[in-house]
Length: 420
Image (tube, rainbow, N blue to C red; front, side):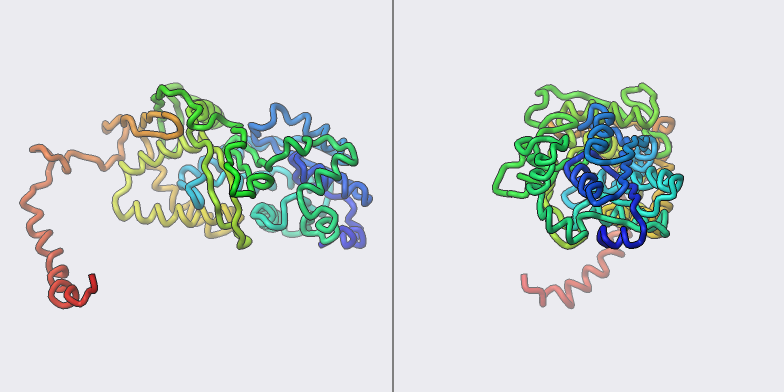
């Protein structure tokens, strides 16, 4: 869909997601110059790279938006961020799906504004080569099937005028739009309190070291303190409820976990050359300190709780959910079903795990391994090398004889044929 088709259909009022970044500023001004009434909504996701979102409102109005409004999405993001942790939903290279999960939250927060104002077109500034266009599109299509979606980056006229970031920078500077100067815009950042995603610009040159990126949620591991810190996280039925014995709500848990882990470089600087959903590779630098701290303690509890078959099932569900988030299918049936299957597992995730944070890594310290503190743990003294537990060594004789039957058959009939 291009802007001319929108006008021909009488759709001159556009409402959508704006971040106040280069794409948003360029698109808002360009569409305004074409005679559109551009109404921008910035969802407050606790963006660490913005001290306040008020400047974003002023920036968007200066770029031609008739409406620029801040919508609170923090509670919703905390809820889905927890589900990401409960699913251990990481993507290639082991980074947390923080940007992927933020998109459906953004759309869900904005849609009521469009409905109240009877706006029929949702617009966004995501590139036509990336994943976010899919995430925005599918979220809008699922939650509001009657809405049209307009993406300037898929409009041939827009792309012809702005084939890349440099042309957008030149356009903004020539029109005195309030953006960062070209010398500072070395890469693009997507932000929420769950994590930061850095890509594009100078990061596209893999011949350059990526460490010119300035961390927004902590420090590089090599700049972290030389002394470690021990932190405990209390989980109850799959929900973190306390840090270092201090109970707090989920939003505060995330904030405190980000602060503590960020100081030690935990979850800062994950480097990935990944496979985008559209079929191309991209390079990114990722930050998610709180997710890493909370996620690792959750995983340690899973090790105590899951038996072998449940572990295999959980890992399969985790892989499904991770891919679903990345590809924009958070709202569809496969994700809903997989999350429902993970739920009874997380109801057993109760316990307190202490970890040691040191220069970018999280090390297991201790667990409160008592029936009261960790009631669903399967870790017992049956595996002890001492004279304790109910496991009788002699009982293994029959077990090994049964296993040995197939091994002997392989040895007699197949093994000699193997080319070792």
